[in-house]
Length: 346
Image (cartoon, rainbow, N blue to C red; front, side, top):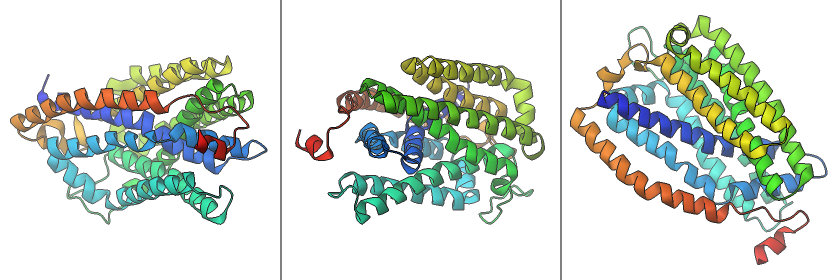
């Protein structure tokens, strides 16, 4: 296998990992925004417990992806940063504000006060805005129309990420993150033996999953006009993966319907991985279509070799550490009725 392609596969796995972990964090912010009813406070407490200290660790994969892209495909990275300067800046602001808001809200002494509710709103709005702009950016890249006809990146050229296709994919990104979060939260609530919240997030996952499927089908239809390169690539290479993705989606819905929550979580992760893989296969052999190919924009082979060695060493250190972090802090949620003050004193 070509070393540049091997490196790209590694980076794509980092993208998938960030989607299934960080994406669920964004989705949790969406459910935090729409929390309602008599269980509203318990919904938010469950979300805060589920995110806990692990939300920040999930951004390791985004940093890894950015650094890897910069190191291995520097020319494509430069073009992406210029062409997507505005949406990526908005996404970055959203990530920063969301993290700050979560901490301020989590440790607020008055859970119902103005200070806490203000940061609650910031957390939720940033959780909506960030996946939407990341979805816009991904759609703009996939469309093959991110750059002007000259091929020179221009930050003021906005046609590709304001097209109907990009807007639909942006909304689909929010729906996908919401589905991931709802599936994960159903597992959390089931572990806590909270039947009310388990049922709520089960139904939420089914609804969000259906919305994701509808938006995905609409995006696929729009790609025939606004992203023909992606559409043709899908027909040539990725259609089996697309079909498998749909079948896994049906399996996820079935697992939720029959209340097999942990199976649904595994299937949801797999579905997301196949969805992003179908994008990569459809776009092959381009990093930034149609001007930047994998071979044409890759760094020197010896640089990629060193980068991959560093990745291997890093994974040996990071993966066990993350596993330990999750195993320590992803303990069952306290039983319903335990007050926030009681949990702090435990």
